[in-house]
Image 1 (cartoon, rainbow, N blue to C red):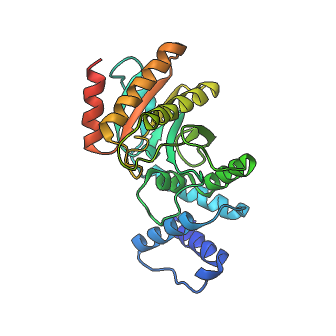
Image 2: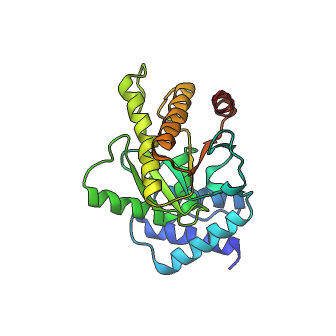
Length: 259
């Protein structure tokens, strides 16, 4: 199959799978097809994936990845100790684990083509990731508390694993409890990565986007928590602070240069 054939096959299956979408026509334009496929993957509820559909999806996502610029964590030079700073799309980073800023439901973002990191990670990992998260939540039996972490495979991502953590949502002024919970997100992910014997982990800017944690204070907590944990444990794990916005890049540069 070509990429176009795979894309049309996947769109056709997802439209047929959901009764409310039956009768929707597949657009001819490639960009519209891509947007429709991502939208359908975003709104698909967790459930079994037919073997052939999974095979075609994996081939499609791997081919898409082959056309993107990839960064290897092993090539990143630490700015201080084992701490690295990298600006880019976390789904193109090859490393032990990337951190997903999840919501309490833990099964991803259901808004079609939303630009949050939760949506991006689930889109490029594939439909298996939502199903894996749903199984973890079914076993747990209640929503994920803020400040903890769970681990899943990375599936079609370049990382071996994804660490999912729920950061605090800020409504008004940041409290001491908010700061404690954000620090707990970083510590929980580090501890889980260490138990999994990972050599590298990449953190996104947890809670700073849709959850409205002030960027500078969040970065200060992130750096302090990671350095405290490394000092306490003697860990040599490479920790990457992944940023997307120029604002966060400048903040982390300043913090890591000031040690």
